[in-house]
Every structure is written in structure tokens, then in C-alpha cells.
Length: 121
Image (cartoon, rainbow, N blue to C red):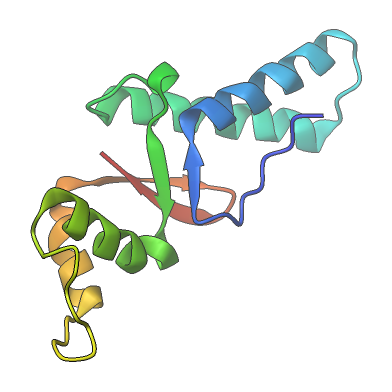
């Protein structure tokens, strides 16, 4: 069964597509209830919104970052992009990751999924 854990820090659009394909296959057998059909509708909306706004195609796997994990994601992104050194000693230099995340969010779009906000590029 292709379950999707909506509590994870990140979800890929490929995972959403897999879940949607699984539910659609079940729908053809008549095995879905109202809640499953609502999930199909919500997943289709998310994919449509991400596809319209993302720099990447949804089939390539656009990463959705859950809102409460975005500051942690920002820390890794800042290192990966070279905005801060990989070996930054955070015991000696204090970085306000909440404020930094707010700055990074200017380059992201948001989408609602399962009652939570996710960010993507």
C-alpha cells in the first residue's frame, strides 16, 4: 500500500504522485470511501498548484518542506548554497535561523496539504 506520511519534514511530489496513482487504482475497483476521494481531490490540487509555480516539473520530484521544519532546512540550504561556511562553528557564532528562514521564504511558494503549510521552489 502506498501510504503518505503527512507528518514528515519533507515530501516529494513523486511521493504524492505515487499515492495518487495508488488511490486512483483503488478507485477503479470501487474500494474507496469518501475520505479517500477527498484525499484524491486534495492531492490533485497540490500537484496542480506546485506544477504551476515550481521551477521544476512535478515528475522530477519537487521538494515540499513542512513549515515548522523550514528553519532547519534553511540551515542546510545556506551551507549547500555557500551562503555560510560548511564548518561554521555555531557555538561561537549565533545565527538567527528563524529570521534567516523568513528571508529565504521570499524565494519560495506555499501550498496547504493535510492541514499543514509546505514550502517549495
